[in-house]
Length: 115
Image 1 (cartoon, rainbow, N blue to C red):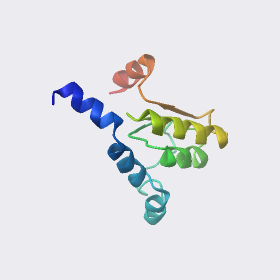
Image 2 (image 1 turned 120 degrees about the vertical axis):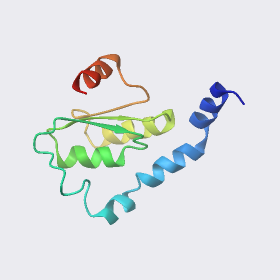
Image 3 (image 1 turned 90 degrees about the horizontal axis):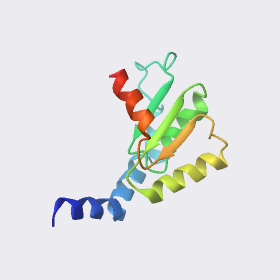
């Protein structure tokens, strides 16, 4: 199997979706007791990139708790991105939250310039 076939298999398979759903599971987040460790202050944070966002559970919770933060969640699974965006719409979080299967070009430039 060549590299392109491997990429397609990973993107199309439910195995990758299951992993992202499990690690973004609200029970796992609840068991931690917080969205982020106490040492991380979000007071001056204005932008968060959630890589491998799955169904967007963590991103949506973050958007609710910190409405001043703009959040972009990305994932390779179009199915999970669709679910994440649908849930964000239902929860009226679209002003601060974007889900995408790719990073928009202006966002890539902005991220690179911040590094």
